[in-house]
Image (cartoon, rainbow, N blue to C red; front, side):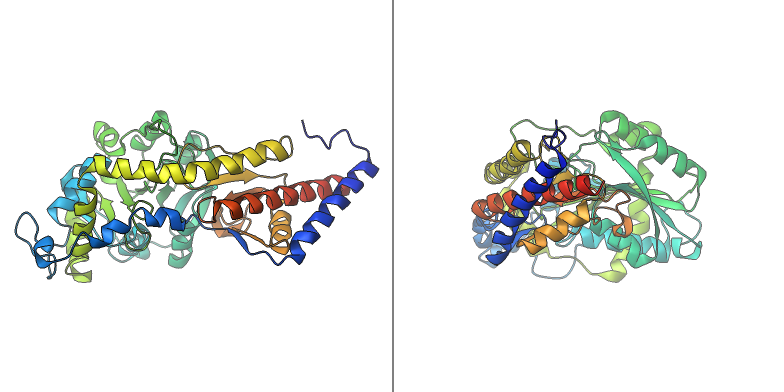
Length: 425
């Protein structure tokens, strides 16, 4: 129960005054604590440093089929890299394109390509069809929404649940409106809530009957191997599920090693059906002769196989698990009955839900006290959280000591905003 509910008005004012005094003390210290982006911390980057030395000569750059990674060529990825990602993600090699360093880049290009050239099965490019819309499960990933804004695509929010997007709404909207061309999905350890789609949700995605013949599911499996605990969290295979219903052409799948090896210097993939790739590859060949094969080889030589990646991810988990537990432990101690939060088993974020109308106020109070949060509303299309209650917390980047200090201040800010609202009401 919220411990403030039984206080008198005078007691509430006294409590708020005490909290404001504490926040003023933090403000005077000139702190600079950052809980904004889900970036690996320096200790996580350090565990991949040996990768930098695995290629030291021209012999290290020769593929098993004789391809020289130092030269032009190989549009869709070296064979060794395809095999590694196929084993890791359980995707047939024939569905895979191994590209450059960024899955976000691939997603942007995929939308742009659809706008300019259309997709397999479609009659015209998206950009020639008038208003184009995407469904956006919310809270969701702000950079997905930024792609839509950049392309002039109208975004339609769909509520997230612990099992994934509200599939009743998804099915109703997709089947009734041919201008809806896509939906963004982070199916495992979703950003920011850390939810994993249930088997039923994946099945319902596979059974969708879109009004548009060129509708695509953008399946951004960014956290495919990012468990925090030893227990593996299972996600139903989207391609195998779609194959049961003959809908495998509806999926564009994305993943990367950005939070496995080095963000910005990892390897990213796109996976799609053979029909889709027949349409995509000629367009891609006009864009590039090939991606960074030396970096692909670097990852193959370092990780060797899927087991090597999983062993590496256990090292990551050992580093970030105490950070997540520190955040959730502080919320349990300080915010019980005042706010709610997710307790994910993997991924990079915790979603904090404060009383309605308080998220922007918490953001401002935190900023004034030396703690930078992701902007309130960022997890919603157009930055508009209709209830003003969601805040995305990223525990991984700060040092452990800075994280603990930042979360303590954040809890004070949530209490202050809640008390202010109670007194105003």
